[in-house]
Structure formats: structure tokens, C-alpha cells
Image (tube, rainbow, N blue to C red; front, side, top):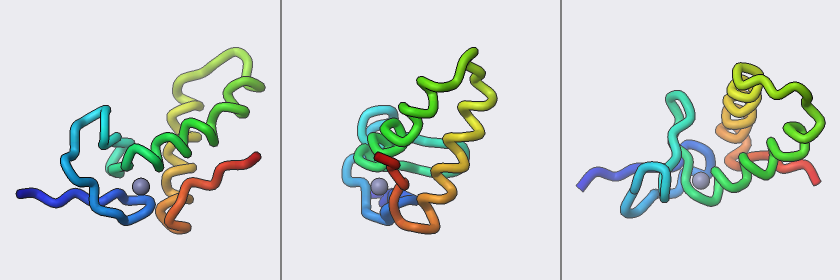
Length: 78
Ligand SMILES: [Zn+2]
């Protein structure tokens, strides 16, 4: 059986199901809880950004994931 690890929290993703328990962002694999953190982290910024630009959104997500890889978690600003 293939073992998949979340690139952010480094935990093993047991039973990886694409878009359900494992989320791929560029070359990174994210577990469900880290993906939730990523969504939470982008939410407030997306609201303030008008008009919405997908290229900009994609860049922001990748930067958040890269930061999360270093810190072992996605930084969610509250
Ligand atoms: Zn994770």
C-alpha cells in the first residue's frame, strides 16, 4: 500500500481519496484539516479582493502552502 503524507503537517493520510481526504496544490499534498485551514486563511482576503482574479488566488494559495510547509501548519489569521 502506498503511504501518502501531508506536506504541511507531515501526518500520514490514511485512505487518500482525491478531493475528499487529500487535496493537491501544485506539487504539494494536503490533508483535509490543512486544506480547511487553507480555505479559512484565504477567506477574509478573498472577500476584500474585488474583482476576483483566479491567477492571483492561485498564487496566494501556493504561498500559504509553502509557508505552511515550513511551519508545519497553515497560518490562519483571526
Ligand atoms: Zn495536514
